[in-house]
Image (cartoon, rainbow, N blue to C red; front, top):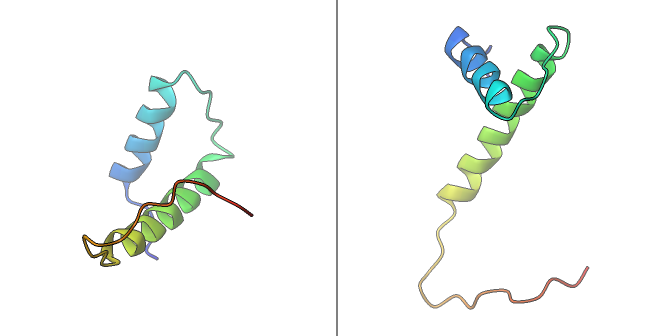
Amino acid sequence: MTAPSSDQENLVRARATAIELELSPTCLPGVLRNSALLAHYAKLVEQHPLPDTCEPAYEYVP
C-alpha cells in the first residue's frame, strides 16, 4: 500500500466531522492506514465474480 495523500487525509477528517467524531492528530495515521487496508479488501471483494445463479445466504451460522 502507498502512503496516504493529503486528499485521503482531508476525506478522513471530513468524514469524522460529518459524524461528529473527534479525531485526534495522534490517531490520524492509524485511521489512514486502516482506511487504506479496508479499501484494499473492498476492492478484492468487488473483483470477485459472482454468477447470477448464486443463491443468497439467508442465515449465518458460525
